Image 1: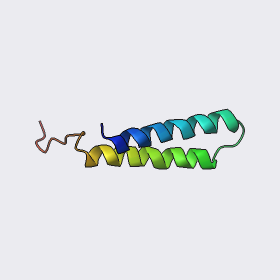
Image 2: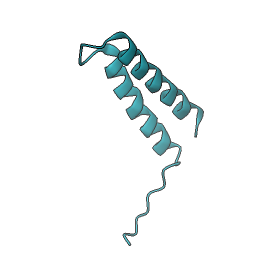
Image 3: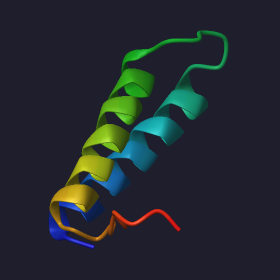
Image 4: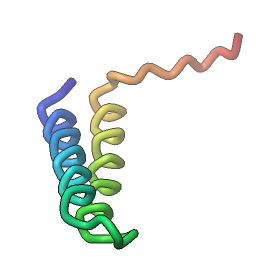
Length: 59
């Protein structure tokens, strides 16, 4: 896992924990939106780092 992917994973986890610890009644908050953005960036960093291998041949 690249450094950027690890950083995005940590940021996603921290913002998710912040959402659940600070806001119990509200549904959509800034930390929750940040968690989603960081999770997408984590997946993109994994794909860019070629850690997810795509098999073009369908078996």
